[in-house]
Image (cartoon, rainbow, N blue to C red; front, side, top):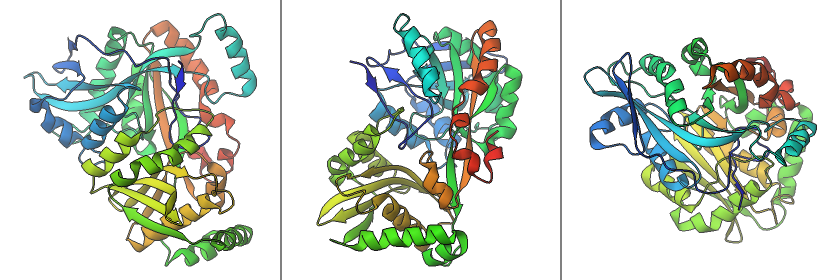
Length: 415
């Protein structure tokens, strides 16, 4: 049976994979010579490469443990692989995770375009669904591995620019995509353009500086009068009825089976999908990353009615996934309650910045959050097809069809 899986939260126009079965497994492993030494593709990190892998992602919110968690928990949805970049002595200097997926190129396009494509797919089922390499992780934003000599990413980017086209052709990929890279990477990844890549915007994250005395100070100094009035009305209505209790835990294992249906309720409402979380992901995140994982729980009369999966690192709270009990979510305004409590908890615990995953932009616009651009760097492995693709990408890129994004003050930063 064909299954669809979902990226992040409701309403995503980001990258989408459709799978009809478990993805094919790479065998045998691939290696090739390079100008700087060699490169190899593997599906597991062996002992001698662990230092490079761990050090390359140590400074990021999603460190090496996160890639191992997603490979273990989401491995039936995508093929998780690693590209080893080795110097002339055969020493691994950088380890870059990537995926093999099948991508639907018309995600985020207007309905009339999708209908036209679906008509073609009645005859050619795979029309505009292409096998591709995605550089990054299966759940969350992408990062580039630092190399073991400099600790920076420049050497790694140069290596990726050289080897990825050949790796892509060897693995049968039509396209190579750097998936959801923050704007801060542009000074490095824009160099990929000389290697035939094109940068286009992905659906952005959003963020809010937490430079307020408290939540009331935020409401009174940041929001419009109409939005303050609207939120206070929602909070008063939410306060009617049984109290909603709030708790934060680092390991959600005891509650994973209870909260998963809440996540799935949000997931089922999505029009477009990428990864689908599961109990194993939630449990391993808390067990293997207790220093960074935070699960926010909301209970009513003893049962969990909402939860959020967050990552904390370097003064930033990253609000990544949510789950809601829709039997009470609308009447009790749970989305707004969970957002309020998350921001209050972040401020009370010394976090300087609130980072929210993509989507659901209308309330975030009224919350006066700013866009945090995320980029896709795309190229085809075939030179002739790449010429066509570069002209199509500005039409295919997803942000152009979201009218709310254009209303954000910094919308021009998407490009």
